[in-house]
Length: 99
Image 1 (cartoon, rainbow, N blue to C red):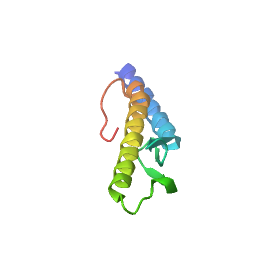
Image 2 (cartoon, rainbow, N blue to C red):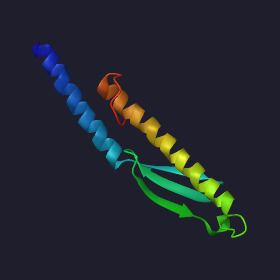
Image 3 (cartoon, one colour):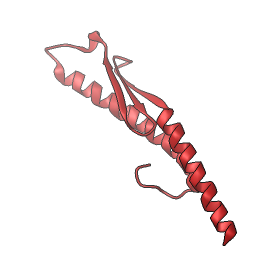
Image 4 (cartoon, helix red, strand yellow):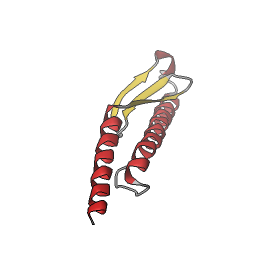
């Protein structure tokens, strides 16, 4: 029983460390060859959106909307992959809600 408690404590420490690393990480998603850039933390908090003036065409707003959405998806995928790589070893392969 004591061994199980030690393992649980170690796992808790690893999860806390992984969460700290995720909170500090910033990932970038891009679209349109860098015309739209989105920055997200490792915990999934979106920090910024940058749009190059070349992407702004009043006659074609739909393309800009698509580029922004693509950059968000790109950043979210990078965040998901980072979270899996950090949380997987810490949780021993168990899935935690939100990660």
